[in-house]
Image (cartoon, rainbow, N blue to C red; front, side):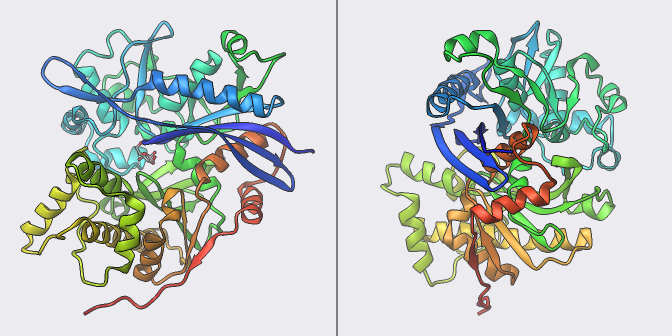
Length: 481
Ligand code: LFR
């Protein structure tokens, strides 16, 4: 076994990147080939403007990035795509027929009643183990069905599967991400009983494949466009749900650690061998998502850095000259008490004026709202840390694990205040990093599929531990006055 190179395409809700990973039994190096913004678009649809993903623009950036990766590393053996979960494209005869909706678009909201009228929430949880999020694919599909949008479709591809298809010409449904549709059985096949009960066409769903499946070479037209000589890199599935890839690269001892994959969302949980489908888990809104190598990602979605990015966007659109890094520095030094609000409140889901919604939340409880951006930022970070710590405790209680360490990976690992406050509020040491966990997990699963490394998740994590030493935050006593 020698070292070899693969390319990870990692699409997040605010930005995408193409990373080159060089991997061998004792090597794990990451190099950025391209980074580009992911800016959703609003399109008028008769009575309102709906929020969509600009997948065509993203695809152009992906192929350009792949070109850059190939120039830097002509011997790339593989490319794999991960992205956010739940959203999908509908195709007919191989052609994308509708522009994928954004999970933050309000169209999904009507789906809850449509689905629960046919299958009750408790029954659903027993079947799919998913936390209730109003935008889970099955709710979106129920709305699309009633709007007639499924009538012309003969295939559904989740976002990473759509890119895999455009890159390779092959249509598959990668299992970790397919688990977020709500339409998989716990053992990972399409739940035809549920699909029928919701009157969704069975023919939409493609064969479920495992992460690490070699799908095929780049489509001939793309090989020509990128001037690939010979066969070029193989398109390989990874944990295509970005959170599944991130969890692969958490440098943890899974029995005693909780993880927080913190980007736009904060995904807080533990890794298990089998799902927890109890009423308590459902009441706590904990999810059992499919992990790489058959592991279960038992976790809860906390609102995440979205609260900060959306607040900054609001202030900037109001003409305020603010910038996140500076606000975080000043929030770190801010000693006065700020309100701690419920970061899980669904009012924060849709795009819009997050600070005004925080102020409303406070006013409803007779609390003084933060009075300037620094106080808002401190209040948001305190509230996220509080929600993180509470989700760690719940994950431990529900799974029966005793947790001694909390790992934070993703962009949130860069946020010193968030890491420290999470340590303080959980009373546990926080190990921060790697920031690029998702891309690393993507790279490692491809590398293993290509025979560059072997072993289970523990040995892959061993490589991460050696290459990326995390930063440690010790818990401090929390002020109670
Ligand atoms: C994180 C993530 C979460 C999922 C949310 C919506 O990027 O994939 O895991 O719940 O986005 O798809």
